[in-house]
Length: 228
Image 1 (cartoon, rainbow, N blue to C red):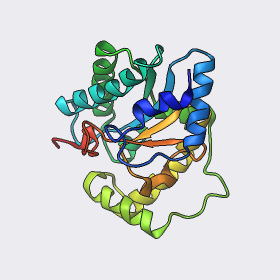
Image 2 (image 1 turned 45 degrees about the vertical axis):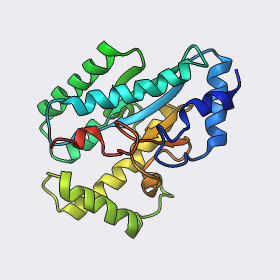
Image 3 (image 1 turned 45 degrees about the horizontal axis):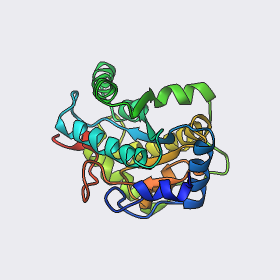
Image 4 (image 1 turned 60 degrees about the horizontal axis):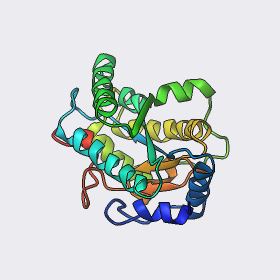
């Protein structure tokens, strides 16, 4: 099976919000999966907003992701496997109650695993703890442009005890650690995000990035931030 043919099944404007990063590496990862007759591996950060329970927004997102996987299955029988990496670390930073975090992610997990064969799940905190990483020494300070974007988001969703700016800065440095853990745990996976390339610095530097819509073509709002 040709890796380019598989890539074309999901790298369309039906799913992507902009062109992906590093398609050559993406093709290499696809070819590696094909060689081993395994599903094409994806990994996606799944966060938590103000709600403690899922709504139709989460279900629509899972269905949309599954449709992308089914597109792959139409030309490559093993299809795609999308790992939902629950960002409990981000929810904790944002000041959410631990019980509320657990309840929400358990509901997402149940919806994903009970209705679809596309998904696997785990928590970001487990990946970080597994590798015991620190921020890399060579990491540059957060750019003014990115910090402004993170502050804008923090004003809406950060409920911690520090200032909005401090929360945004902490979020950046937390991501610098987490992206290393993701690279080590999911080293041959395509990283999926509902964000755009303007926050590319937050994501694993050695994984190809697929920027996609969240619930349907034209919508990039994360499902956990809908209906809040």
